[in-house]
Length: 85
Length: 270
Image (cartoon, rainbow over all chains, first blue to last red; front, side, top):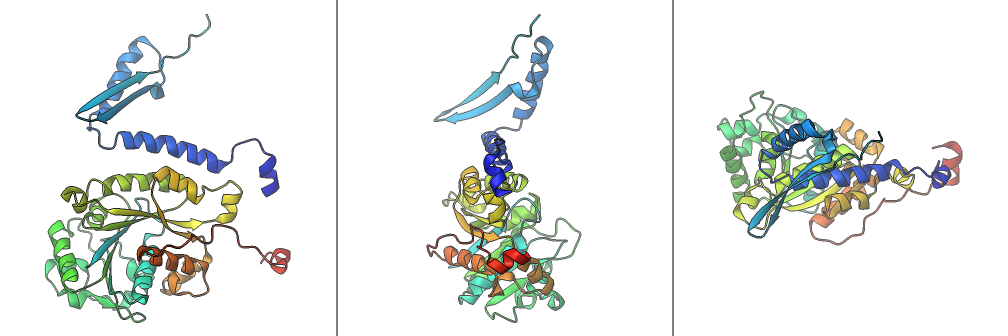
């Protein structure tokens, strides 16, 4: 098992776990002290965008960043790549 | 000076009560006066792990309600005379614990000159967990190297930094430590389990102990003798190291690598 693992090109499950956690923990931390309306805001934005573009739910990110003296609400929407005709 | 330590985790079944019992015993064994309080109202268990379940007459809620004195409710450990247990109540009333009530009991223990009060938190983020952490000076966050436990620990860290007395007083906040349990060095080496460094990196906290996965832990709870008291166990040594670090000693982490098995053990799969 130990030797086999060395030759396997697939990332180990521990590494997958770490990567997944790194992303979700960072995301949850960024919304930790954020106002409660953020998830709802994100959902409604997603609905509106959906009327025009077929985006993946994961493609809409809403972040609230605190800087000295002011807050920045950052919204990013990753549009899907153009499908071939 | 009394130090109030909460043992918490968010997720259930990761070893909070086992850890509370062992840290309490370890501190008492070093001559500290320790009170262990079970905050898991409705699901009393610390008494079983400590082996004093048949000596519970009064509980935490009885003291809060004034049915008895604190002295009557504290169970003195038969092995370590400076160690005391305050059992959780078995009531189903969720509101049995109140902030004022908990504070009165803690204040009385502080006035009594206890060195350490260890609050064994229930799982989850409900009232019991909130009150267990609210008055803490320090937190030991028990975590298994597993995705759901790590994520829940991060949630708990968020609460520790916002929903505690120290956080609201601006008293420098609660001092937080990680304690890993069920650590399996062989699986870590095989890439099947996250390492101490992985967990440390994700949660961004110092590690006060790593307790290897061990059959001694179940044996200890079976018999009501906290695992730290089993001199032959690696888990006991790991907990004792954690106690030393709580007291400020600098010790390297042990049991992070698989123990080299002897020829016979390998041959016969011992």
